[in-house]
Image 1: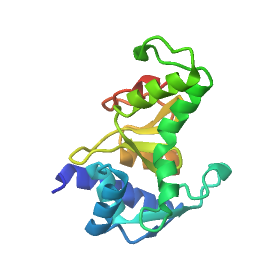
Image 2 (image 1 turned 120 degrees about the vertical axis):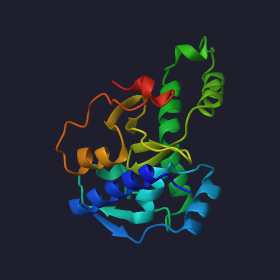
Image 3 (image 1 turned 30 degrees about the vertical axis):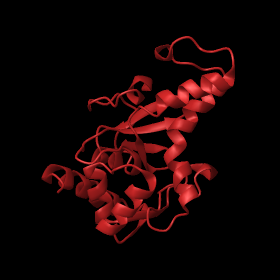
Image 4 (image 1 turned 90 degrees about the horizontal axis):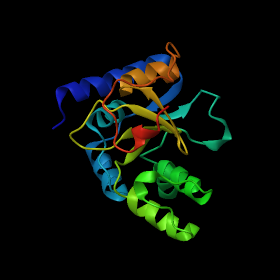
Length: 199
């Protein structure tokens, strides 16, 4: 059972998004659909994210600023191609690995090996241990985790990571109403590993 505060937060984010007029919203995901998604992709939605998607499934955005990178910036957990959803889920990790291929390295992983393939292998192993991020919209992500809620929303482009809201409802205001400067250091609890890159 979802915590009441998590449900309120997710429903408030859904309400704000609906009022923005920036997106088409279809009927929310059912319990069976949540189970199918979580089983297929091996993660659990955070409780506020779950309540948000149960209230309504955002599909098409009327925001033009995401460019051609995202044909469908809102992940369609009901009807999208499985490979498309996997690419969206893999975006944060892929961005990190692309940085490793280009010569990047994190000190906490020890000394970088001489070969790129060995460096990638170490990075993949390390990244498999960090919290899973789930796409909300384009390159905006929320931490996964059944029984959790209130995580900050991160905008991720490789190792360029920015907090776009200290929770899901604040994120909707920042990205779809643009009332605040979304690029701020969040006061939310940090997300292990990923928050280390916030600038």
